[in-house]
Length: 285
Image (tube, rainbow, N blue to C red; front, side, top):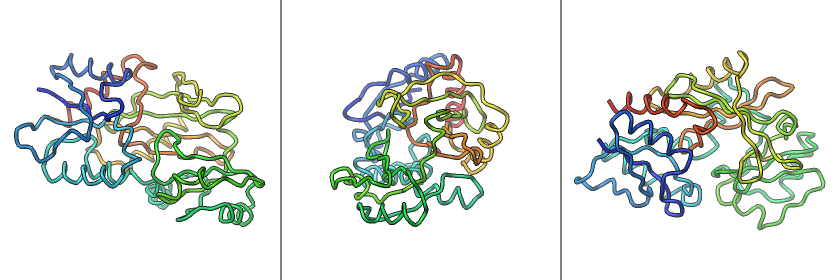
């Protein structure tokens, strides 16, 4: 059987880290082909190979188009992992409200439809925050994410991504600089592996695009317990999930629950690609 890895037009080939997953699927008898999601026609009846969302890294720039494509994939009944309804619900960071209501701890947060400098200053004043982080509600790889201090006045250009989708403003968690961010990766609903991501000196963004570093981690029992609480909110139909956590003075805080196209750090932890491959095959079966 052939499995299609959905990629993006700018980077149409299998990402280096995902090649390990493709190799693991190959060992299980599945041939993997990459194809940009914009080239995958859900309406065609000639091809019904299952699709795995892997490096659809441009979806946040065209969220309406991506949502329509997911809906068409669902209507076509062509197998998609993670499932279309799960991916749709994970596009907008508003999903964090639901998780918070379910008892999952997140940073103190405010939601703003049309952020501007005066609105941000009012939030900082009302909340008594000295520092905060602004995130577009629809974003990826920290696109449009800004560090905000009391005296900061971001420009209209800086705020443009957040104005497109609305914004989430969160109290800055200093431990992200001191301790880094932990990612727990799950194969299906089962914990597979973890990594610690650290920001470059002087930055708060842990992504490699901004100079961040990644290393394997053996998570504590407390982190695993927190991760299990988050995963209890994730449908069992998911083949993979990444739970991003910062250990703060308040305890573990959920930063993101990544269910669309997260990097899963197969190259950092040997054997992890095989576990996720088995989870994919189990759901395709």
